Image (cartoon, rainbow over all chains, first blue to last red; front, side):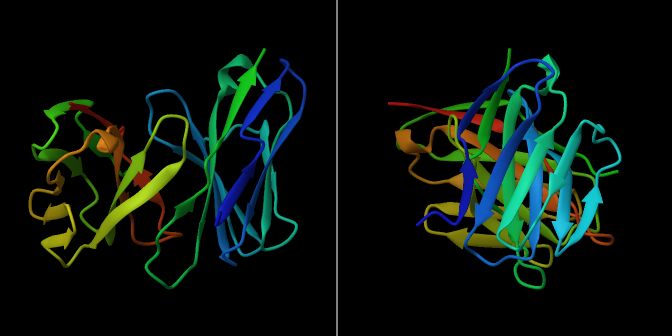
Length: 113
Length: 112
């Protein structure tokens, strides 16, 4: 049973054309994360939500935005994708106060043409 | 800031043991994790160890933690071809929102 779901698994967009990636979870976790992972690199945290509180990493470009309309869903919006934004985007969730383990979705691979 | 280092590549024969090493810099880390990533997939949590432990065993997996040297290792006994993947070490910092920092990953190749 999928617990962290990401759609679509593969996304192709054009240079400069806005794109939205989605993540949903059935775990009722209060913390949700978005990571960017480029080829042969470690996942890089972009931002996270602690409940409704949005926390942006200092080096996350302004081009990247996020929305969390409710506990289950979180969206990553890339306003004007550049060629350098082609990567795997991973969503993860965590429940605070427990073992603090992050559960990852399968990722969305973004290709920018 | 936090920094997590891993060797990039490890090759072992099927049936042998694999040992993947990791060093980290944040001495106040509370949890240390090992994740597995297969091609085109997300990260799968394999195991974790709390910082007040020296060792944790879970079936074929053994995690050793040397806090003095800030060294973490993952031993996979009787390595199988299905173990071929990239393995990421990660540490969870204290303070703030307890950010998790990942290492660069070690690609494990299992030779039949």
